[in-house]
Image (cartoon, rainbow, N blue to C red; front, top):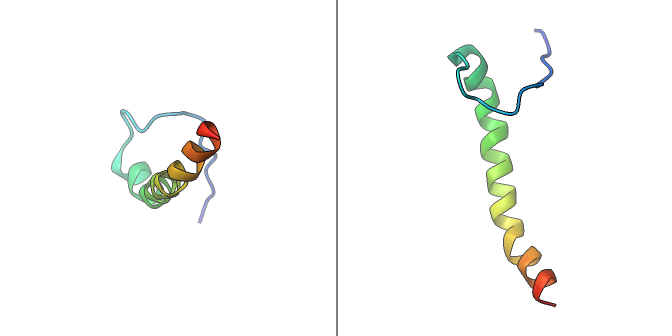
Length: 46
């Protein structure tokens, strides 16, 4: 198993061999951002 450093900021023009392993991390990040959004909004409003 090799570790890859994600140096590009996009999944555009990537093959499935790159996209599939990263999909879990992308979904986890989206879920965490949606979960944190209400708390961040409350901090902004005060």
